[in-house]
Amino acid sequence: MLNFKEMAVPQSASAVFSAYASFATTMMLVRSITSELLPPKIISFFHSIFFYFFGSVSFQVKIIIEENCGFSPNQIFQAAEVYLRTKISPSTDTLKAHKTPRQKKITLSIDKGQEIVDHFDNIRLQWRFVCSHDEQNGGGNKEKRHFELVFPKKFRDRVVESYLPYVLKRAKEIKEEDKVVKIFSQECQYDEDGGSGNWGSINLDHPSTFETLAMDPDLKQSIIDDLDRFVNRREFYKKVGKAWKRGYLLYGPPGTGKSSLIAAMANYLKFDIYDLDLSYIYSNGDLRRVLLSTTNRSIVVIEDIDCSVEIQNRENEEQYDQSNGKFTLSGMLNFIDGLWSSCGDERIIIFTTNHKERLDPALLRPGRMDVHINMSYCTPHGFRVLVSNYLGEEADKHQLCREIEELIGEMEVSPAEIAEALMKNDDADVVLQRLVEFLKCKREEQRKKEEETAASEKNEGEEGEEEEEEEEEPTRKRHKRGVRLRIGRGRGRGRGRGPGLM
Ligand SMILES: Nc1ncnc2c1ncn2[C@@H]1O[C@H](COP(=O)(O)OP(=O)(O)OP(=O)(O)O)[C@@H](O)[C@H]1O
Ligand SMILES: [Mg+2]
Image 1 (spheres, helix red, strand yellow):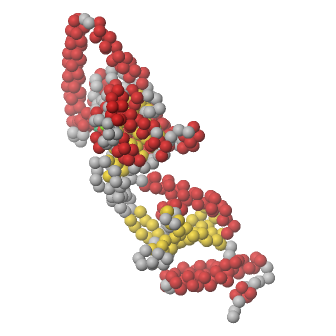
Image 2: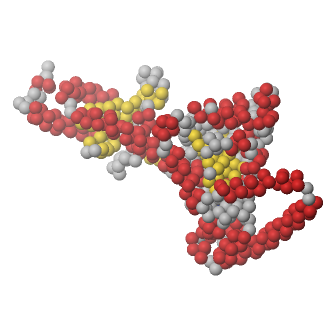
Image 3: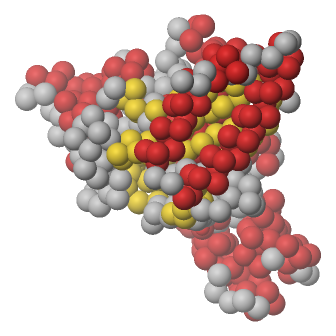
């Protein structure tokens, strides 16, 4: 019988390699031609003969990356699938195209048998996607999929220690870029991804971003910085032994952009939103189950916390705790501080309210809600943002804008009211003229109301009871505190006026 190994032994090592290299190249060529023509079993038979004779002197190494490691998915396989989509060359013959209703864009991926060449640190890496029937598990229609990664043997350590981690990292980034942010709610029954039982979801198609939000620019920037710091602080939170979570309280009058800010935060971080409706929660156990079924890198939102039914103030809570494990405020706060913190990473919780003063102080103490954000009535700067959003970038130069800014500076009008007025017509002249009229009307109403209130306060004062004056004191203190929270350009004319971040 012919012994190829003996035949192929030349005089020097370099001659061995060059003979092998040219043979290997020829084999590669033959393989790529025959892979289209011959059945896989015959190809793998030739492969095994080739590797039997030449495997021992091979200067290439092949890493097999299977789809699953036992019952768990293989993260390297998943990452390679995502990463290689960005490496498809124009010469690739067969591609697969897919798009689920959730996805915004069509994605292309390589088909079985296709190869992709990648370069990393001057290393040439050849990927091949292989599908075969799963013989071990009864064959049938079940496919067994793996990637083969071939590269020069001398780079093995660099590939394992640097290249594969790089592929994992890039895949994570690519997934983040393509991620469609979802909003989960207990009300929504439908979930395309199967859901987790407690939550249904739809895509968050809220167009709000930090660019479109009309709010104080310093406050806006400080929120962005805060979010950036939070997501980059994995190691910090670990080091100080704190749960990696952050609580925000957004407060302010209706229509000032609290919900829009939540959407902007979710769009910015690409975090899903869980809209937690407390009226669906009947006990602390319910709350535990619902919160435990939320995922990492998400925002749990509890809107209008002051109006949420069944949340009892702390005076009543013990009574409630004992009655059939009913849902209590203390249960919720303990949950935020404890269990949820210890089992989730990168969690944000946001409460919103129109009446911060009505909230239980337990919810406001430091450590519970890390950041308090005052969403204020519209400011002249906010108006300029809205005008360019709704009427185009040049519209803020319109002659009526100055008058409108002055009016806005003298009164309380929400960004929602301005936004609604700006949508009423496409013609800037018409829209801005009507807005001026609307603002003048509203200012008049506000003036009348203020006069009426002042008159009735004066009457009460004349009836003159010292006790009543004492009662008013906390209200004034509250207003002052509102001013203290304000940063940036808020001018502070009473509650809700002027943005703030604490
Ligand atoms: N600050 C803002 N910047 C840009 N648009 C805003 C802003 N505030 C309100 N709007 C517009 O008004 C609409 C309603 O605002 P949003 O729902 O965010 O207010 P809210 O503060 O959550 O009100 P509520 O207290 O009633 O829940 C938004 O969809 C948006 O079009
Ligand atoms: Mg809202």
